[in-house]
Image (cartoon, rainbow, N blue to C red):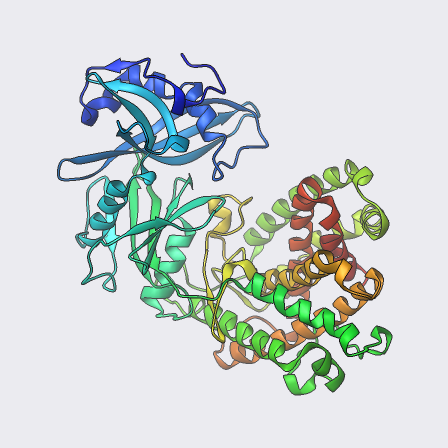
Length: 543
């Protein structure tokens, strides 16, 4: 047995198996060797592995299946990773056997010999031949596939053939392959015993609602596990030509805005303010603010608001498929919401109490305010009275922020409908108020403003305090213009998101929820940025 830390790329094959490759997974001795610490060593180094903060106990093979075309056979594995903290996660890993000494040295899992042919087990996604097989299986999918591995294709995916494939960027939780520079196949690495919400939402918006501002659904791969549950392992969509994501776009635009403070000799104290959550048309934005921030930024915010509203209108206009039909607030939803948020709030409270030594200045001041007002914050989460809410809940994006939006010319395309990474798969499918997505985008605006200040502090002449003040003023106008456009679109389509007071209550509630959620990540990963969610929380509780 190999030792932990051993590099498989330099090891000779210590194991020989007489089975054919096509029968190797039936050999219990091979499975035992494969699941050894060599696999653990490989998995824990992968970007898509989400268990880095927990202690791995052992790995089991939960399921395996063939991914094949004619005589070309690869294996798809569902690995169950068990942790000492008494929970587990499932991961998808396709494997192949290669004998080429120079191939994929960084993605070798296990050196073995099969019928005296020395080589390596590798992650099959590295093999072009594997990527081609998957592409062709989706392309030739039959309408009602009843086999264990089920390939599906939409009517849009036709009249093409495999030309090329390459990896797309450095993703955290998935691996995406670009085909023919036209299509993207996303392999879900962390998987769940259910259909992935990204698959469900993409297919629904694209096929059922013809929503144009999301990549078109082209196909998918599902497997049926031993319990008869459908598990999504792959999603094929069109590749949207783009100029980058809205986060990078916003950082570039905001850098110009903050540079203008000095360039246009703007005194922050004299900038006009607006009320919280006031709905604005661009004509309502004072000339001084337009002169400072530029008309183009507000026009872009209007377009993003329009696309967000159109997404929600599409998601709220279904009356046949019960997974997507709008529904009202009720007691069950309220119990689910409060339990979830109180658990999360207690977790963040523990983290902040243990992290005060990492903070200083405004962040420390706001952290102490958070602790002083913890009962008030908890009370806000508890005070969710569904009987006063007249609006409807729908399936929502669930993890909506600037990084989930692509910019193309003067338009926006929404993607990645997987939902919040910390949530269970069932929680991600719970119908929510659409304003939860709006709140997610508002928190993203807030982040972009502060990230711009942090990233360029040495380039601006104004003090950090003045920059924060200017940022808060700009934030109010950005969300005001967004709300002004969004609510008009929603009301014109008769999607019921409640009366004005209800909308403001839901927005504040969702903003508080989102900021408390963000707090955990920032305190654990980059304490300097904890001031952003802490400031968001302070704004809401002192409103």
